[in-house]
Length: 67
Image (cartoon, rainbow, N blue to C red; front, top):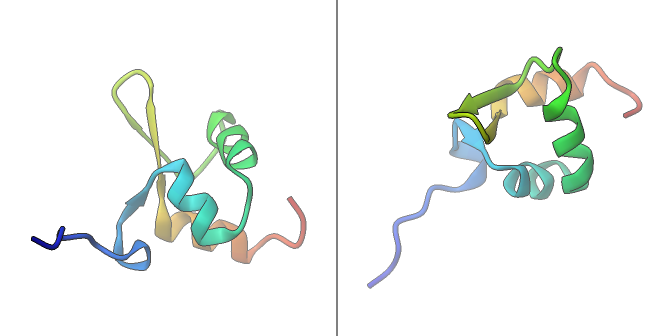
């Protein structure tokens, strides 16, 4: 049976690994950005899990020329 998967570009929230693949930014850099208290695209799921809000992440990157 084929596994039902949603393409990354259609997901609402991404894991660090998915965000790294999607943006071509390293996982460590993504994790550093998610750990910043002023991060506008982090979604906390419980005490340890952090997801990336895809649309907010895209908007954030559009305004940047350097990370």
